[in-house]
Amino acid sequence: RGAPHRAAAGRHRREHHREAAAAAVGETHGSLDLLINAAGILSIPNVIQPETSLSKVQKSSLLLAYEVNAVGPILVIKHMRPFLKIGASLGTGKGFSLVANMSARVGSIGDNALGGWHSYRASKTALNQLTKTASVELGKKDNIACILLHPGTVDTDLSRPFQRNVAKDKLFTREFSVHKLLSIIDNAKKTDNGKFFAWDGQEIPW
Ligand SMILES: NC(=O)c1ccc[n+]([C@@H]2O[C@H](COP(=O)([O-])OP(=O)(O)OC[C@H]3O[C@@H](n4cnc5c(N)ncnc54)[C@H](OP(=O)(O)O)[C@@H]3O)[C@@H](O)[C@H]2O)c1
Image (tube, rainbow, N blue to C red; front, side, top):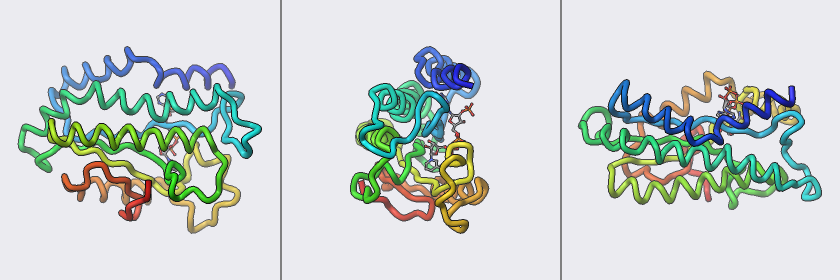
């Protein structure tokens, strides 16, 4: 399974894929008023594992998590920006375009009491800063708002190897989490630009 997983990790690392996706949106729709960046990695067998101690931290894991979880989404926004700007100008929907980036509570520096998971944590912290920085520029210039979302601990492939210590009522179904996140997206206001929300709508400290 190592090789296909390594290949999978490569997808969000290729610039021409992002450019092709943006071109396809342009050709098919001409505009975009909602972009959700959900792709992310926590572990890949034989490639990257969440670190339980500083002694397990490796340069390759730090760089891979950063590339997939932070670099990928911000470059997707860069390429989709022209279409999001058009979407905002059409006057349909909310009156502005929205980018929702899937972050994680563990990316919060202020909330970090447990330690561990260095690569994943730091990559989500970087995603938060990159998104916040983009939100200032895009909010002013293009009428595009950017928000960050924490979905809760959700029963997906990503969390499956790490669910043992999660209380039953703290492990959400995908349907529950998506319902909550869509409610935040549907109710988002322009003044929410640059904010980091948990699944329940509460703001998370940076
Ligand atoms: N599940 C949780 O408890 C939890 C908690 C906090 C935050 N999050 C965040 O929520 C987001 C969604 O996670 P999930 O739980 O739905 O995980 P998931 O089931 O593992 O899905 C991750 C998605 O990312 C895509 N992906 C992974 N590596 C990629 C790459 N290199 N290039 C392009 N796409 C890639 C996968 O595509 P393929 O299916 O095609 O491989 C898949 O669609 C992630 O950003 C994650 O960090 C999840």
